[in-house]
Length: 348
Ligand code: ATP
Image (cartoon, rainbow, N blue to C red; front, side, top):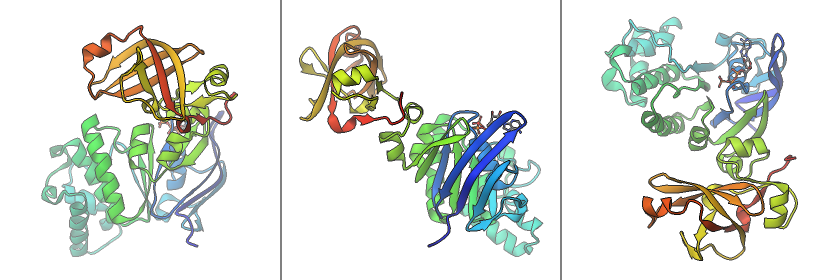
């Protein structure tokens, strides 16, 4: 079997009194788009920097493609890192920026040109080869940084919040493009982000970090639909936890349960706001504490008679903003299918 692109074993890192990473074990497959997701300070950047070789682990072992690299310098690893600020050279043209790494490695001029052009074509920037970074938009600069990373054909590309500086629209567009480029070039991407939607959109698998540890590794669907811990349930999507007491009354079993907002139907005054749920459904009555009209959907915050509060998200199929506003304070019935209720392990 092929060795994983990255294998981390018992990885730790302390900075003086601060423990940034406290025991990470992880395998990232060859060709995977892998995201490290977590709040600020959870240790994901430190893990990325240890993979790149910019930080030395306090303990543990790092293997890349089956080779131990724990003590090696960054340039001795077959890795390239793209940082959030892109670190482009302002006095060089786009093409010179992209070819720079090849020049350092003494690749002949004609070959440098050809490969830089090819890398620029890969990120759809052929026409911008002669411009300088200041003459480009944020998204274009981001793509130059990516072309510069890809031109050296590393086996592994590390990306530290590379879309963080872009506005929302551009960011969403680049998410789709970056994923498409990764699929085309087929190299392993390890992507650090604190944005759960970004991680869900782009990744083959996600590791969710919290306080220097990984709480769960899984596909976007696994992490979203079957969160392993209350932290994951809350960080990836809206947690919507049913506490012990409410779960006992509503689900009929002890434990802490979660149901995602978009799975819940809201029924008012006997008439469904949305089409009625199918059999095998769970029912909970409550009072609408808050309604938020979102344009394409409406978010309801409902205080349950059984205790606690759930968020429900409804598509606005035939509902207008006036209908929605009238529902504040209304008595409602929430329904969802049994199979959308999942138990959150480790919850106390
Ligand atoms: P962010 O999304 O804000 O970048 P992160 O999850 O990437 O956060 P890290 O940057 O890995 O988190 O930081 C983890 C912890 O280690 C934090 O408490 C941080 O303050 C600390 N830390 C990181 N680098 C250093 C350093 N060079 N010296 C001291 N403490 C550090």
